[in-house]
Image (tube, rainbow, N blue to C red):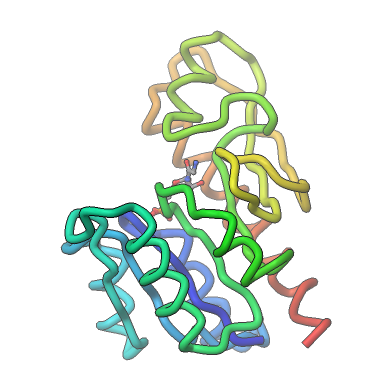
Length: 188
Ligand code: GAR
């Protein structure tokens, strides 16, 4: 199963996928890693691992539609079976969703539909929930919407900060992501 991974940040979940693949635990090929901005550690670490990388820099496009065109075409040029949003903090348009119908996968650090958006961990802490978690879903054109594929709960501790809670959530998120990719790879 060929995958293209989209990142906006450090790509630590992506690293877990690369590690699992290289350890022979995941029958996938990371065809390319792309970002929406320059200077992400996700792209840096992928290039260091010898993976093709690209940047479709959001700031370079005056027209949102042109950015969507460029991103879709660049991702499609690698002929992926699946596109993974791994901390990719941009909404893609309907044409992207249609091009990769049912094959665009996203993860989120909360138990959706609770706490969608860019601050799922912070928002859960601020609300005061005692349990939050991680979600893997098929992405659609909404903000962290789309059919849920897998979820895992994580208890919130009294002394948690956003950083400590996010780190524990990421442990579950990576496990779910790798399990889900393994499951999906059986189709290819
Ligand atoms: C992950 O926890 C991911 O779920 C979250 O960004 C983090 C990326 O970490 N995504 C969202 O919040 C999407 N709404 P990473 O770059 O270290 O893998």
